[in-house]
Length: 217
Image 1 (cartoon, rainbow, N blue to C red):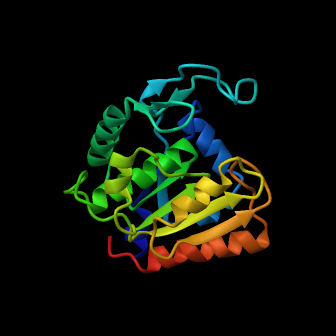
Image 2: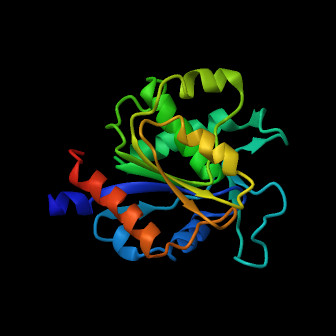
């Protein structure tokens, strides 16, 4: 089992107009024992170069990327189908993956993939995903997407980080309702990957350990 666990892969999807390297830096503040003993973390860049200013300019060096584009109300999406196709090809060629982790746009996209897979729309040959970590994620709002992706509760073990000062606090709570028995971890920060104190670290570590011990991947 130990050798098997070390080969488990987690696909990590970064936020809007950032990069895989930036997400890797973001979660580096977490206890590395949460991941390194059990998982291989894969941090691809988004399919498209950033089409505008990035919020991390001056904080982290470019290049910056985005997975797809959207309107202000987050009800219309551009290049989403191309993005989904690209990610499915990436998962097929580089997997199998044990689970998904995402921040903001990456978490929203990861949940969509899980919902689509549950309904047989994508990744039909890929083994079932065992876990999902959402940090500041949300649901898509376009009805034709919602009717498929969130038709039934997504039966994947999930952890949802929700910040008290996050502008996506309510959408993050709504996303958690799309999953069966989600674990919600609340923190006092905003739209960011939070630092984990002793209590939150213990809860998160428990969730990760549970999915490893329970896995037949």
